Length: 453
Image (tube, rainbow, N blue to C red; front, side, top):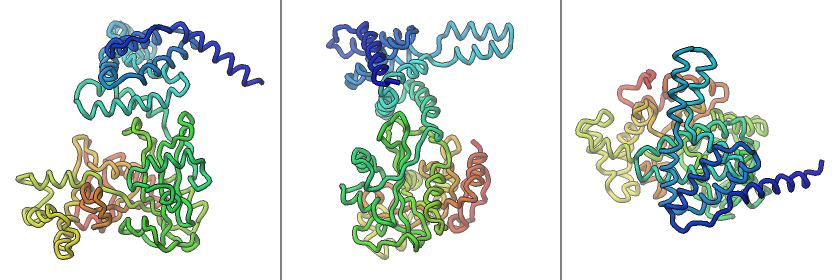
């Protein structure tokens, strides 16, 4: 089959459809936003696939040209004018009440779907449509961070669709090494969100030595653009600090002497996919891949940051009656306000016990309004079937880690034979599966009672 011929034919048809849309570009941002909304209405009302592809591409091109104000106006239009069709919804409900059956129930379901979901599906038909929609949702997240209104419904629709488009069945695992194309390696450097990569030499130290591995998940619609990647260090023991792993000068562990695989950096690469679940057991897939290569490895752990701990602790310290902190611990924790307290050995030692007790409470008892652990990294690893194994004091003394977590880092343990059971325990009752060592940090020790919500 001459694929070039058919490709050119389809392109010609699409270009003719696009020519139907040609119109003078308006200079006003408001007018541009409004014309874009009109195009969206035409796209939803059309039936021809070729002209629909051209129209979808035109919409995405024009959207990309919008500045902040018109972009927000476009999001507002999506919220106000592209929700469920009220007349269709009323008719569907009336039909179901008159004759409850599978057919009328299906119509209620279809009528209740916001029109913008079908709009997004049609925009996704354009070349590069998936990547454009992911970028669009990233920009929506930026808007939502500055305001609290009904744009959340638009975000919910993005998450609903992306959860299907980016589930684990579509993701492909690839090893990243020094032979990986430079375009991908450049993105690994740029996307690293946990421990910044300081250029090509630093990247090579992380992926090239025999005791280092890096794996990335890719989606077919995002060519050479990773969705998530994992950096792995092969060590003899479970590490309690990040500095030895990132050190420029360090002893390289021969692969056949390593017994532990440490997932020390896991980075989501696409802001527009924030909050979208890629399914459970991603880390298990990486662990099994490493285990096939090196069957002598017996331990799979993370060395994870605790990004929101300092914020939570500051709030608890300000509470007149904190369930998490005793008055004695509050008094001791006042030393956290001293600049550079971790350089003073006596001060640091005085802070160790109260800080570790507070961290244990944060991980084991602190919950959001929905009954979930407060820490997003904890939710990820617990959902993937890990066990909270150890809390490490002053494990990362970088400026970022001290500001976010007072230097704490956490080990989550992945026991390959226990992953499914741990996942079910967490999924069914939001129970945090934790080691005895972590539970003993609380006084009295926490009983693992499921949390409602």
